[in-house]
Length: 238
Ligand code: BTN
Image: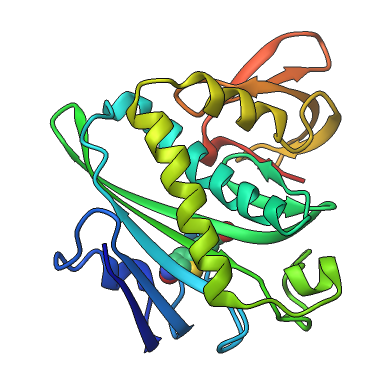
């Protein structure tokens, strides 16, 4: 396992996917010039203030149909790490990390598959650490410093995260999915709370999160009592 630090890269996910990194290797950047987020968004992060890194994993034991468990394990490892610093985090489906209703970290996982099992996953994580001023276009950013009112050491946080990820990954590799599914639901943002969601055609609905299916689909109870299953591209939070 190697941890490589770069002063500047386009995206740590792109570097980590270039074929020279093995299981457990980590690519860290002080700044990304083209950091990528979910839904085609950019990930902006002030130079040197935060953690932007990618971890290469080779979960060849994991069936493709169960790949969401890996996403859950990575999200939980971020939440576990924040918990070690006394910051209580929640997971906003599918894998945003929230503190008091604000986004503290984002995760972008890019998978390669081989037949019916996973071949490689590159888990890219952007964690806001010491940044206190953000682009006004961002809806609700927060950082560890804003949450805890002190500065943090990014390298130390990375070390703790890698420990937390290793523990979650070992659980997954052992075939014991229970703790991951249970902890993911325990930390699920808005579970059981009625809230508004937007469908792809712009319709806004009020519904309540009932849970997340093993395949990663969000389960929502509608106002009429029916349950709907939604993929990531089929729903967004209003
Ligand atoms: C999101 O919330 O939209 C996901 C953001 C993921 C950002 C991280 S930063 C490190 C890695 N490299 C990237 O280009 N993106 C991820």
